[in-house]
Length: 554
Image (cartoon, rainbow, N blue to C red; front, top):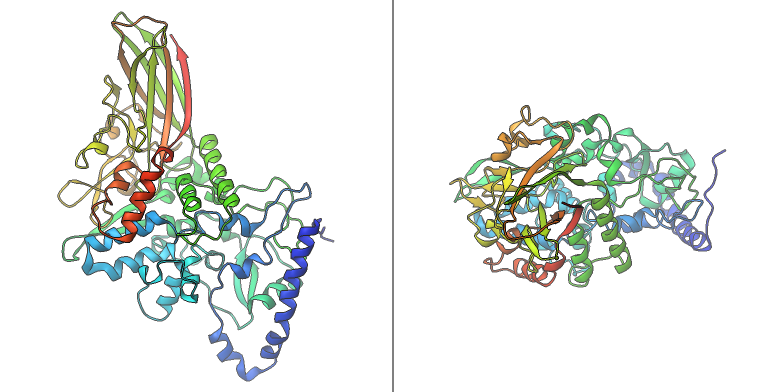
């Protein structure tokens, strides 16, 4: 006999309210079921998707026996997934691409909506047309067409992805397969748990036939890979396609690492509840292995922007929920992403030599995914009196990095270093994109490859055998101290006019949207680009955080 989750008064109220809603829906649905002549037409008229508000009624008000709130709906709605279409940087970036390539605007909007507005995209595809992005903006319009676009990476999309083609290249770029209804009241929604028939009928009755269906593939990294393996089309003037560019491929990086044999994406990004928990407020039984729908990742900065500009961006999550999600993301990054150690420190009469090891603790490159992300070393040396002797990699108040060539001049960038000897040299772990002419670009539709990719490698990642799409590019490829075990870089600091002992502080900083990526939007005359540049400037001092740090005295 399954145990029933204990309920607080609030949870009892929510459960009764949800049950009342479900009960009210049953008679109409049963009448439709009793008319066999209507079955075929009714099946065709059934919606393929529901927006998240239909799911939240039963998947909120959830807590463990110890009282920990594990509400799926509340956690999800504050996540980056739920807010993918509200993301002002995404909106600005899509606008920039359509201005750069006006002849390809329809194709660009269609492709960019695939994973940021999936319900709207799939419904447009069903009707034989290309999906639009800007027809749905601003999202403050509460019309039904915008409700589906606004819902972001919605519950009803992910949980209908079948195992067909999963993990293959045919499934990348959002080309997952969504299941079709097996009958008008049997529309599978996949989850990891076995659901008793009586419990399944509750959901069927309340949603018009969507039935919870157990299938292990929902826990597979390949589900995430469908959208997080993205190849963009490189376009020449006039819209000619030049080829495909691996814009983000964390799944392929993961496959080339030791982590592919250990943990799926969900292991880190959907933390497991450490005790039994229910997954539904109505007749929800306690289950082991429930995973939280927080989708913790890398973009703490965007979560804060969504909170600061919630009205303009039509954000549904409460301020406290977004604050909690940003805090979870920051804690996640600081505790699970990297480690910095000083491996050796030595001095001669003229120089202090410091060997710094940076290790990637994740299952993919660090940073990974969207190429606006960068991590870098900030090293600071003080003498015995506390005077600054040397500094490399300080963050400026405007979000730029002191000494970084790319933040000063968009046509230049910092090389990968094996040894740093001056303050205007900064060790930055980043991708630098190139266009058809071999020049630096931040335009995704202009990018044909990488000039530099020295992002930190995960354990087991052998750069000698890596495929082209995940290859190390630039000086790091020849650096014997840049491996899957980390990167060992030497700082040689002149100390001729200073007195020791010397205090050395080292920090690894991380910024999800680099200064150049934000400010390259400035020349574009549009609401979305102007708005994001303004957002970035007003919050520039909060664009980056320290992932790891260490210190030593010599």
